[in-house]
Image 1 (cartoon, helix red, strand yellow):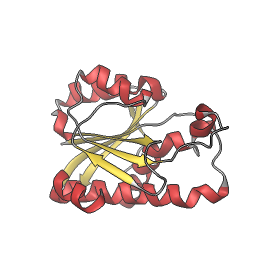
Image 2 (cartoon, one colour):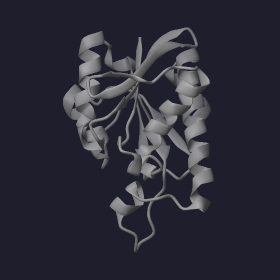
Image 3 (tube, rainbow, N blue to C red):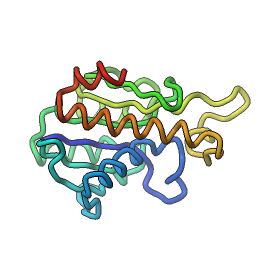
Image 4 (cartoon, rainbow, N blue to C red):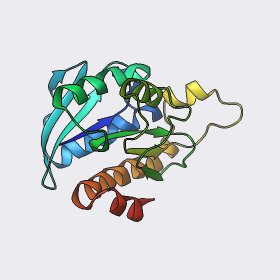
Length: 185
């Protein structure tokens, strides 16, 4: 069983921000595979189904970004999911919009949501898909950049990144993380 967690912020004010790329990827997977995300457990919205022959639980923590690890650890413990089957999807400023990166493990970097996940899992050894959002212009505040409105001209590249991340996850489920990394990194 795979736990696929998209990081984001739950309120509608944040729905269309760069910081919600993880939620957007989960929404696209749920849409493609007709997975009902209306269930609630462990401070999360979630749904479960089969994707490419693998049982999956798709999760959108409702704890707000900086406390995402609280929801993740609850699912991991309840379903007894091995860390190599816990896939975290989130935004990354160090990657250009429309690009993604898949890794088997690694540090949280400067991402507070991932820092929370690492803290609660007590490990960095779990796969992740980072969706590029790029960096703000010099004069722009980083917080405003990640949780502010996305200008119309920036939406297309971000949507491309979400679509690539969705396809990368499907490839990972179908053929493993190495195949996904080879195709999408």
